[in-house]
Length: 309
Image 1: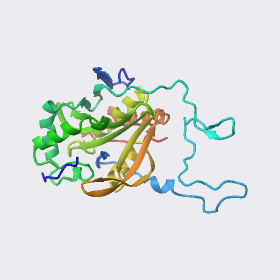
Image 2: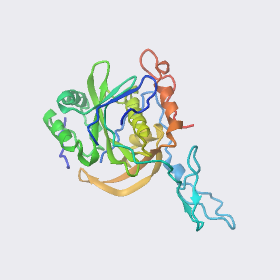
Image 3: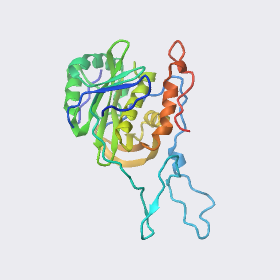
């Protein structure tokens, strides 16, 4: 592998067949490219849809349409007005900031997520990542590729826990081997916001039902904890990651221009989000797709993932 410089809850309610186990200890990454199954057709990009306006122009006595203003969504709380007649956001009722995710294991039907233990997972991850001989999986990540296992483990040890980044190893339950990583990061309980990122899926994991279920387990866990917002961000040039976000039911929110610098290059960052009031509609689509009867004898999907109603 080529060498590159390194800049440097529990008791959640889960679907049948999915369990969460945890040990309580107290209280800029990019989504990887290949998360869709092999037979999945790319979904249309939504960023063009968000930028359209009515060609007929504003009507008399009506305000002009606002660019990128979202329309009403199912289950979304309605706006209200204060005593001055000004529009204000929905009241949060009895919502309180959720705890930080503390699960050490998230168990699904096809995969298992385990809190990263480099002594146990490091050798497996090095072998799995080494199958990416041309280094494509590292293009949009702030680190990698790595010269050897020691450099990989040293980098992961340095960043795990940094800025709330918490790595989980994606484990193939049939072999017990760790074949990928992803993480929670930018954990902000006060705002009810949390991000999924630092996604490192080996060639063996890419475009499989294990990859999709890993994302489902991460999302289901944080919404069960009470988070309001689950974020996905990626390099705006990373088209496969943008398509994956849309396939998973995230909503495109826009691009932050020249948002950061990594690997001595400028990055525009595309933002996507999935919200708590959207999850009850998205979740059944995941469960239908992950059902055993949706796969043939070779493990290929019968029906594609459709999480939007």
